[in-house]
Length: 350
Image (cartoon, rainbow, N blue to C red; front, side):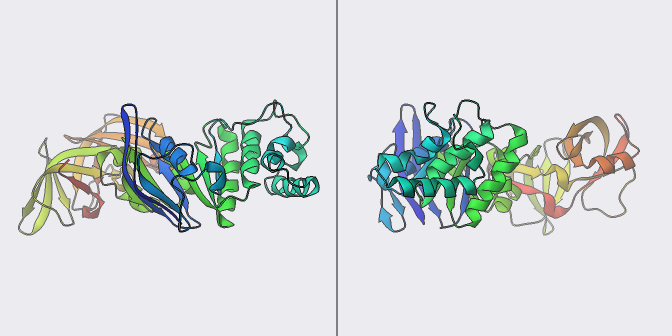
């Protein structure tokens, strides 16, 4: 298990502040954040490239806060791979063993095993100059894995890889994790976090602002920043009120939302995921939240089609391409939208 206790580090105007984090053995942990959020800086502290100003780093019950990086049992794969251009693929993978003056026959055996596991045996005699991004990433992984790390750190591992090659690298990383390797993967890409992580932490301005299982974090964000990161586009400034034992949220344009949950009266934000909203040309027979509006825009999206509807508030609705084909509406046509009372996500005091 990796444990970070009140880790702080000031670097110029930037400050990692009181980071507490527990990562269990075998976890695939994705640290998600924008450029400048502190995710790479935190990774470097775990690896031992820098020392924290305060706090402690523990790995498997051992305090490694000030231990030399080569003695931590941690593998780090850099964003730019840090491949040695003057060496063959074999030489790159074997580098750490050769530096430690390991037996040559044993070194060759271990290189062959790792290369075979990563499907790069056919590249061992090749120069690294003409390798693809995916091949370079596998070489960098092999060079790290040959040291048998207790923990693997990945800094933006997909950043320089063509889209067509990313699925292969993802399958490889999932396989390594299933074999028991604990992985911390730094990225700015929400989709990577969703497809790979067993736990995810969102870092912003040097602090982890939400952490948990990906479905919890992305379905129930606790801040507007996390909500935007998870693709939510429907934000409404509202006043929460309890009327006859039922909760409503009233928008600035006097749209009333029926909601369920435990709240406090006052101002806040109400969020709706675009895929929680249903759209139809006919009014629903029964719905606690039903609004008539005008279609303002219809655009292709990663989910199929995104329909923008003006009901007095602007709503963004995601529907599949197949559903869109079956719906007889177009821009400027009149439609109805509906969503359940449970669909609203309330952020109070924001």
